Length: 96
Image (cartoon, rainbow, N blue to C red; front, top):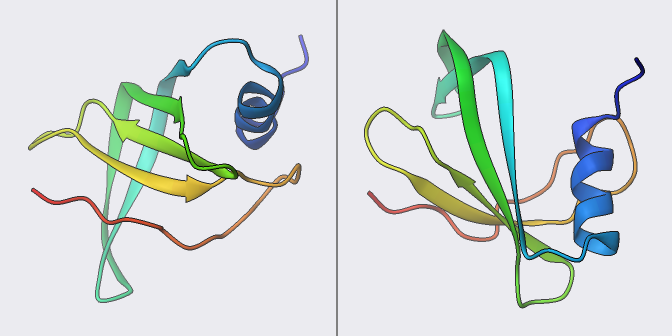
C-alpha cells in the first residue's frame, strides 16, 4: 500500500481538511537532539504523538508535541510546500 509523505498529509489537512486538528501517531522514529546547533544524541521512540492545529493566522499551522518526557509544548510553523523535505523558521518558541 503506497504511503503519502508527512508533509503532503499536513499540507492536505490544512488546505483541504474540514477539521481543525489532526493527530499523527508514529509507530517509531528517532529524535535527533541538538544544543547550540550541534548534535549531541539521539533517542528512539515508539508510538509518539503530535497534533497539528489549523492556526487562525493564514499560512501558519501549530504543532503540539504531546508526549515529550518533561512537558507538552507547541510551536507555530509555516505550512510546508508540497515537497519531500522542507526547512523553515520556527515562528514561536515553546516555554517550559
